[in-house]
Each structure stands twice: as structure tokens, then as C-alpha cells.
Length: 295
Length: 258
Image 1 (cartoon, rainbow over the protein chains, first blue to last red):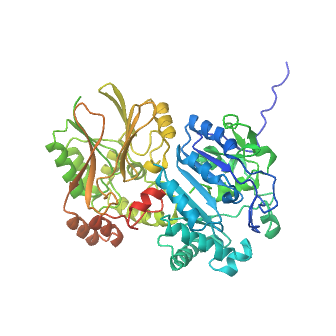
Image 2: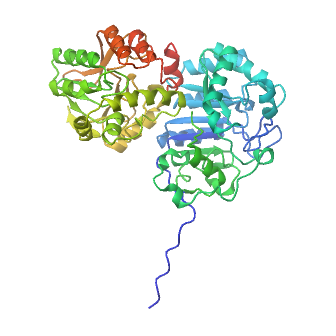
Image 3: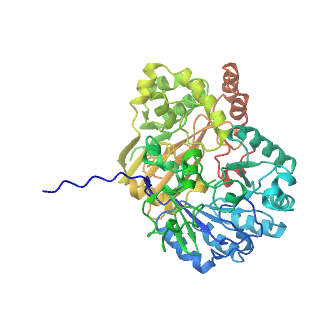
């Protein structure tokens, strides 16, 4: 009689998909008109690693999401408004579910804002416009996001506000966590002074992947999750327990890890509905900060 | 099929709760249900249980009730924005300090859901959503497909919930009906200082949203006397939400003043 094999100790905790509530679309791929120095997926004008998605490519995923009872949909890039079919895609999305668009707002003029408003009015669901801004003034913002991007983003934000949107301004946390409250207040004040009547501000942590590695640093070996981290932790707070990200390459576990080979979980949403090992430094960031890419 | 009244979120607003209960009795309610969150926001959490008992109300636990019963450090409302949480902390500390041990035990005995059959439909009464006490079901932020899934997975044809403070109703593909009964103790962010509850008339599954006037000015003054934030009293007086706004989806936010 042989001795029973030792039970292997799992070094990496895994997270099951509890329910598919949220489906993301990398609708502009990794193509962006900006080249932000902290971009965790290294987007830029020439990055075609993930391609633009056509309306025809998106539609089967919308059908699948509907069949699986998804609650809401998110569209990001790259810069989504570089996708010429975006408005048609948003029309398809808003027919079935609440929808959010993540944009740098630099391409939003009065006509586009009005068309977005018309789409929003035509749906029973909310259309959330989320705009990235990373500094309180041009000097701070443009150092990260590129020359002239502050003025262009504010122009886009004002157009959205004029069309009746209350955009959510997303800010990368480039300061100490202790300064969070003060910084949020300052962003509120700045945005109000810039003509946004009801600023909504969401702070997101920095993810030390993509271009951010060169700007500051990558993850340390110690910034990894072990089973001990999960004791008493509510895994439902991790977005990978309730959402998936669709790109031109297939379905990935989350918006942050689309360049990690192991994060590509299948061609269809249904194929992607399985557990995922939290092996990345970025997983540690979500765990430590409670961050979610949702609104 | 008997007429029933369903209310949620009395939030320590005893004047609004009494007005809503009297209104339901006057309409001939066979039974009155409360979907939880007895305290929070208003000045008199201790007055809630006696009122609910006086009117024979059958009550489901909200996140507030659970947190108080378990002596949790926070209300467990599920807010994600720090600005929302700042006010939520004030309301919870106020309520926690005014909740007696017997009241905590009473809250701890509340069920997390109620199920019964009414007119051949399987009713499910819960606080937030069928799957989680503190899940926000806002009208403009839930797809039909999602609500249909929640109904299917929970084995219900008619779901009644609260937690968001805003009332709405929708029938979803597959035939299930969701009714968010709104809140009694906090107005519906529509510029009117009213208490809201749901009336399900005899032989009807469709909700009738009932708004009941009460002495909101007296309530606002009581809140000020008790030292609650002036923002809370302003909401009671004006009917416009002034706090915990960040959780609102775009459509719901756009309807409010702030």
C-alpha cells in the first residue's frame, strides 16, 4: 500500500465567477489619440495589439450577455470615439442594458454630445459618460496625459454638461492615499469652476503594469496574493467575481489584464465563466484598495 | 386576494411612518409589510419598533437592522463613494448610539426575506435584492435580462424590495414583476416632502405608489434639535436629496436638484 499523495498547498488563491453581472468591451482596442505615461495597457495611436471592434463583432456578445442576464455594459479603449461605429454600438447596447462609456473626452464636440444625449433620451437605461482627467491644471494633467489634453478634456466635459450629462471624472491616484479626500475636494472645486454644475469624481489606483512600469515601477515580488490574504475577505468585492472583458481577441478576466496571456479565458462569454487564479500584481492592487473599474 | 401595503426605509422618521401606516389602515390593508432599515437618517430609531408592533407590521431585515443587531462598525449600505460614506457614517453612529439592547435583539430576529403566494404568484419580499441585502436595484441601472435572472434564480414571480429610496415598478420578460417600494422616511428626490409606500389592491399585482403628506417641518426641526446634519433636515423639508447622491445612476441623478 502506497502512502497517500500529499495534498498540494495552493499558492495562488482563485476567484470563481459568482455571476456575470457586467460585460466590458475594449471597443477601440488599444488605439488611442493620447499616449498617457501611466496607461496600464500602453494604448496609443500605433498600438494595434487589440483591434477596434466592429458593430457586427460586438453584437453576438451583446446577445450572449442578454441571454446570461448581464446587468450592465461598459465600453472602453483606447479611445472609444475613435471607433466610427461607436454610436451604432451604443444604440444596440442601450436597447438592452445600462451603458457606460469611458473616454478622454478630447474628441467630444457639440454635435457628438447632442447625439449622445439623444441616445440617452431614447433609452430607459442610464448612459454614463466617464471622462479621465489626471491633474487639477494643465501642467499636472498634461505631464501624464500629453500636451494640450487638459484643455481638450475640459472642452469635452463642458460639451457633455451642456448636453445635460453629469459626467463621472475618473482620476488616477498619483498622490498618497492619505490625501484622497483633499484631492477629491480639489477636483470637485476645479470642475465646478470650469463650468460643470454637478461634478462626480472617481479615484482609481495606479496599476503598475503597461507604461506605468517605466514611469514609476512594476510590482514587487511581495505584491502577490496568497490564500492567507483571502481569509475573511469578501471575494464578491473583486470585479473578476462578477464581470468579464471582451476584446477583439476574445473574453478576458478584467479590463486591467488584457495583455496577460492567462487572462484570456475563451472566445465566448460562456467559455469565460470559470474561476481565475489571482496571480498578478494587479490582483493585489484590487485586493488592497477595494478598487473596481465599475462606476 | 387581499389588499396589502408594503413599505421600506422608515429611517427613524416616526412622523412619516405613522402617517403611512394610518393611510394603509384607512385603505383597508389586510396586512402591512416593512422591508427594513428602521433606523438611519431620522431622529427616532427607538420609535420604529413600537410603531411597527402597534400596527402589526411584518418586517424583513435591512442592512441597517443587521448591522445594529450584529454591532457592526458600519451600516453596510454598500456605498462606494467616500462622499456618500461620510454621511452614512454620521447617520449610523447616531442610530447606533440610540439603539437599545432589546431593540438589537428584536432586529436580530428579523428574517432576511419573506415568501408567500398571493393570487397564484410567488411573492418574494426582501430589502435590497433577492440575492443580497445591500444590493441597489435602481430602475435605470438594471437591465430587464438581469432582473429576469434574479427572479428566475430566486424562484419568484413578484419581487418587492427597497434600499434605493426611489420607487419604481417593472414587468420583465418571462413575466416577473419587480416593485421597488421606495422609502417612507426619506422623500423621493422629487421636490416634495412626502412619505412613499406601495399599495397592492385586492386582486391586483400592479403596484400603486402612494404618497402621504406628513408634518415634514416638525420632523426637520426635530432632526436639528437632535443634532443631525443640516443637510438631512434640508432633504426632509425640500424633498430633494442633499447627501448620498454619488450612488445614483445618471438618470436618477439628473432628476434631482443636487
